Length: 249
Ligand code: G3P
Ligand code: CA
Image (cartoon, rainbow, N blue to C red):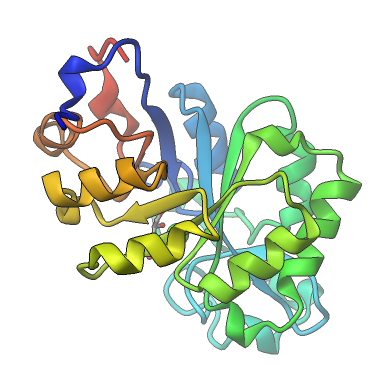
């Protein structure tokens, strides 16, 4: 079996903006999402967590320390309390006033404009988050075909898919896998999303045999892109969308 990319026909790779255009804007803010749309991303990757009062917010870390001017765990604040923190200045004074986005607002704003790759971040800390996210997607009538959900937590993904079976789920992987693990995962998932450095002939062969799609992360340079696009992958997550400039697909 030869599955090198150049031998496939028009296989286009989804361009996915990691936490928005996180290379040039503060991650997981509306500034970063707007810039991702401007730069031609097809999906925005976002991380979701829950506040103390069960609002779904978009933030990567378990605490607000790194990406806001506040300190403490996301889950220890109400949504109103979280809104008081500045989520832009840590990156540059030009982004002063950015806030931690509410997931619902992201759905409302980007419905029909761009796809969403949603990551459940440490979902075992947030019992019930899967159902809340599914409900919000249904309430906001976001096109289910424009959403992919991913996590390192397979149980969480399965739970989510029990609420919205049409939305594909992807297992994030940052460790080497045996074929038997991939076969086992393939019973439940549609995507297997490895760290890009793990992609090799053996992994691609197993994914192909199990009919799994794959989104790789996080590819940040032109050289890394040239390396990874030799394989028939389905999507690339990047902080720097400009690496796709001069690319045909
Ligand atoms: O898209 C995968 C990637 O987002 C996983 O890593 O730490 O950036 O959430 P992290
Ligand atoms: Ca993520």
